[in-house]
Length: 234
Image (cartoon, rainbow, N blue to C red):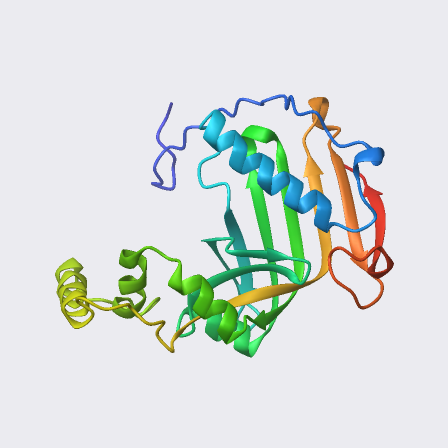
């Protein structure tokens, strides 16, 4: 290969192997009028598959997309910690970048993706803070190390180095030695109040199955009267 005349480094094309998806798809008869039953069924199946086969690491990992005040998108992966008819939810520092963005622009989207199962679920809606009692109950059940980390980490803020974190951890361990770790006031969570939910199931030849539920009225994810269901093109 000759050197480019503009002095740029020669580029080697990346060869991409196309994988033909072997998922079972999703038939109309399997799609309920409201999304909650299918969402919980798929989440449970992903957790079970990880236990049985080990090919769905972190089955509760969910990519959450927000926008800042200038309309620029941001995305990160968190863990699904709440799931009921009100919507999916996650926990985070209330001082984090995502929390700051959600207070400014409460719109968000999220995706649960399980490549080994050729399945994904998308959520779109608005952010709603999770209640104090729910947060306290969940925090009390977290491993002690995770509880201490909530006091140590000023999430998203710059840090001088690993040693600074280790020292903060040691101070927190000493502070709470011999007693329960309370929930910090800066630690909270957000629920997605959904306007739309989509289920994607991969099929051979890229003829995937996609179904979307769009909100048409007030009601939870389990209320058929609140949703319109439709099949989408692949």
